[in-house]
Amino acid sequence: MKLTEKTLEQKYLYHGKIIQVRLDKAELENGAVVGREVVEHPGGVSVAVLTEQNELLFVRQFRYPYGEIVLELPAGKLEKGEDPFEAMKREQKEETGTTGKNYISLGNLYPTPGYTNEIIRLWACRVEGWGEQDPDDDEFIEVERIPLEKAVEMVMNNEIPDAKTQIGILKTNALVQAGKL
Image (cartoon, rainbow, N blue to C red; front, side, top):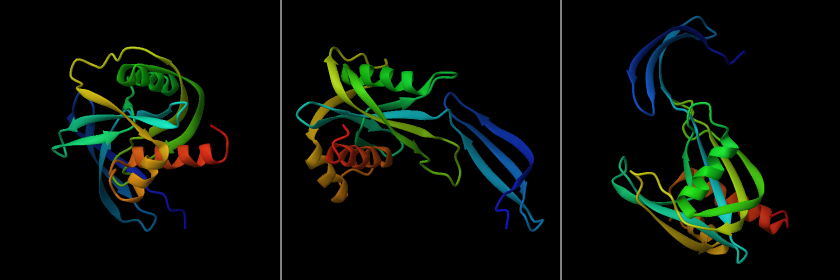
């Protein structure tokens, strides 16, 4: 089995500020032709920012699609052509006012591979410096410190639904436990 699909046709249905939506026709390895709905997204970045007291910095913000305030690690979308590492440092500074040191890649996260090509690149770091937040004009956030151990408990108790935040917390905890961060 090849497990691949051949794209036969792409038709764009929507071009937005952040996403594009297209309807593709693809040929399966058995020759059947199927429709594939794809949401194109520029990708994003997220960072687990850890203080010397092993507290993680979180942001609380209203997330319109869910109609609720969500607790998340600092994150943001990539601008066209932007280097993911530099984007992550920019988002960290904008949202928490901090700079970091000892950055460690936590890898890539495919949040919903069934219909979008979005990739979120994850990092962890220690705080190096503190400064002022500089959120985007349309961004209203509150920063919160939570001890790493408590954050892990929150993930395990289903109190943090955001996937990138769960992964960032658990991987950061593993690195701290191994003495690597």
